Length: 249
Length: 224
Image 1 (cartoon, rainbow over the protein chains, first blue to last red):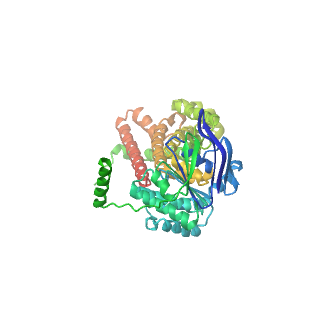
Image 2 (image 1 turned 90 degrees about the vertical axis):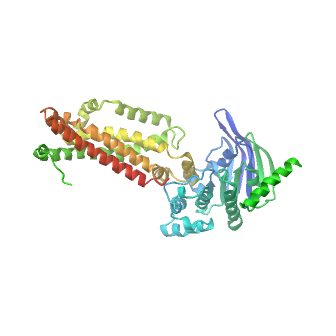
Image 3 (image 1 turned 180 degrees about the horizontal axis):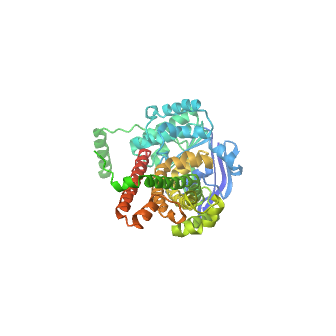
């Protein structure tokens, strides 16, 4: 579905990505992990050519993105969803209007838009918040709106840049469950960049480790699933005790 | 409450109404020029600046110097300097319509700069999201930039409008008239200090109303 072959990217003297090749198969959830500054986010941005590579080829869904005209590239990007660490929603538009934007770009009629926006909001469980503004939502809800927006135009691929890194653990689980559902129910290929091991292990089928702009290794992972996080006082006490035991035993 | 209108204002009622009308024409044309020409130039400045979508050092530098040059003219000198140009456009260099030419030019430069500054406040991430969705430049401008920057754009236009009123007061030098010119000719030059004071009060009220309207609208449309 996505294939990078020997892509490199430098900024001034600094080599952010050094000749990386990798292939993401259709329908899989692919993880990219590494320390901050390793080039994970740059690598993700090469997949929809938000960063254009200095060398190498990027092929997504059979199209070589690196050789498209500006207009063709815009068209191709409409089928590649993307979500971000800081959500990047439009604060001055309602939840409904935010999700409607990609449909306006793709030229849907008003009625088609309405049906599709509500469908996407129901999918992420936020149809009741359609008329609210992002500022009125929690972080997890904002990210779900961003996911609904990314899904609106029926993408084949969803690129996720640190999707849970500004969320706490319970809202992280809420977002990860939605991502899992998108992969299972809609068959969307997902690429997740994260520095959080738990996130990567819970969802990804294969994981690449990136270090200093190079691909260090690629591991096959059995997804552990998104664990339900308990927030009862008993569970907190228990967790604290568990840690204490392991320290002193 | 009964509003007591001082005799002197009643005496000059028709002149005051007429000159306020002239001020409105000059400021109205300036606001229109600011929005219709200044806003696109400010947007273009922003898009051509470093790290933005149409990054172009040459175009940016030229526009930047042009805007700075116009804004660095003492306004009175700009008016005089532009007299030949005004003649070409309007056919005469005197009167209210002629006065709108230098007013419009300073308005364009003034608001273009404020538009550029407002757009710089739009988070980079929002622009990145727009590009990732496959938005074209016009879509990015109208569906992202202006939507997120709208409060700043309104506040900027409010600030500009208040400045335009101030600029309009010296248009008497080319026979532009206006309430400020009235205060100078009748109040100052004919030693009617009380009349001058009343006109100043009228102008203060006018500016307060504009600022109040601008601030209220900007707050109402800001949902961030």
